Length: 335
Ligand SMILES: [Zn+2]
Image 1 (tube, rainbow, N blue to C red):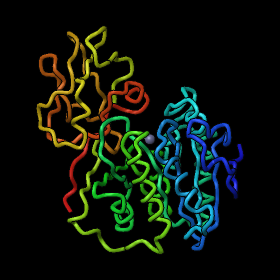
Image 2 (cartoon, protein in one colour; image 1 turned 90 degrees about the horizontal axis):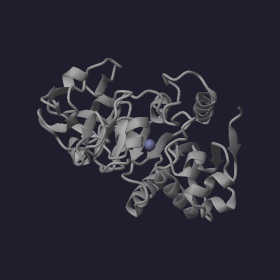
Image 3 (spheres, rainbow, N blue to C red; image 1 turned 90 degrees about the vertical axis):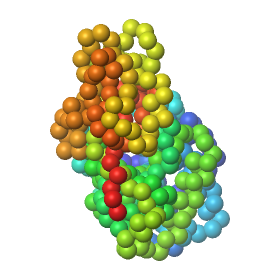
């Protein structure tokens, strides 16, 4: 499967809705546009089809430069337009487009080949920096993620805001692959469909296009709150779960989203278990080791956290919980 590349914009890309891009760009496509500084900024959007903020911010950026020269060359990747046409993260037969990149633990397939082709094309073009734009489903603040604790990465991240998350797992994410060749961040822009998210991402992308170089000095400690993702929490396959007391093994509390980016204490409850139900969660640390008992316990029929921590990405969307995970657990990195 050869990767599709285009060197000009179909005009209607400037106005089309994210759900209709598939009619115009029917397969994942890499675009290249010339700008004043030759080393391109790389932006990927719609790796998850229902996360439209990145596409809308990119569209706003392209509109701004229709009749003026780009300050820097721009390469951008429109990812899963097919899933976008259906308003979902991915179609059930597709891999997750943010787990297919070099470093992935997935078996090789067309999509992993495509992703490594993109990285090598961008490496040949001496990519300046990489930005992958996402949304959350739960209530989360805006933040940037990095896969390396490097000054230039943290400078790039804090241009978006003071909240930064450092993680090395899951593997196979876009920003993990690009971290090997240039400063790279993932933006998490809150829930899709919020104009503030689009404006914030647009302003950020435009600022990055105007950078002549990335500052190599450390970020001032007053300007950054950085958290390290220490564990990923999944619900074990086969466990019936939900938010209502119906025929399920595990009833999650309906207000779990409020714990995102909040420091919670040992003993905080996440949900209730049916009689004699076993541990419904599987927790792995950043080395991929099972560490469920270090984080959760069952007291009577209550599922509790056993140490102080800070969750992110908790959501009420059961499809996302199934397709991705229940949440991540973080610790603050002292600067
Ligand atoms: Zn996403």
